[in-house]
Image 1 (spheres, rainbow, N blue to C red):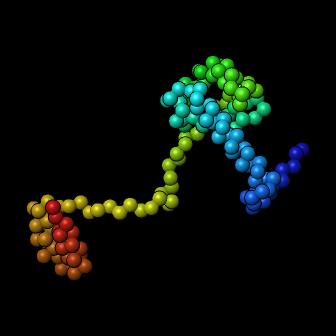
Image 2: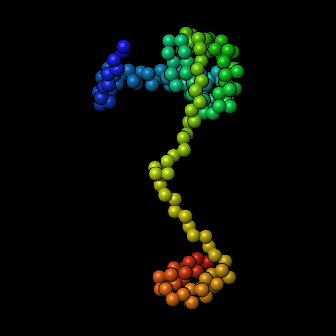
Image 3: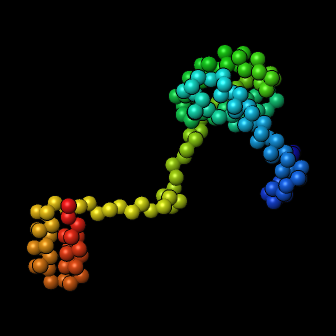
Length: 153
C-alpha cells in the first residue's frame, strides 16, 4: 500500500525551492499544452476547452458543457492524429474529456449586496399614499408612508 504524505504549502511557495520549481514548471507546461491544443480545435471549442493535465500517454481536457464534450468526443480520433504532429503531443494516445463549467455560480454569501433603488411612483400614486399617510395614527408607519410618497417621477 502506498502511503500518502502531506507537505506544508509554505514549503512549496518559498522561491528557489525544488517544490516551488516543480509546481511552476508544471504550470508553464500545462499553459504551453493549452495554447497548442487550442490551435487544433474549432473556434467554438477554443473558448470552452482547457487542458487540465497530461500524463505519459493521456491528455485530460475540461469542457464547459456536455454538448461541447459530445462534439469533441466525435472529433477525438481525428484530433489525436492531428495532435501527434506537434512535439508536445507526440506521446498522447488517448484523450479524456471531463465536463466542468468554467465559471461556477458564486455563492450569495461571497457577492456584495446590490443596492436596489426604490422604483419611482407616478404622481397620482404618490398623492394617494400622502392621503393614506394623513389618516394613519401610528407615527412610525406614517413617517414611512410619507417618505415613500416622496419617491415620485
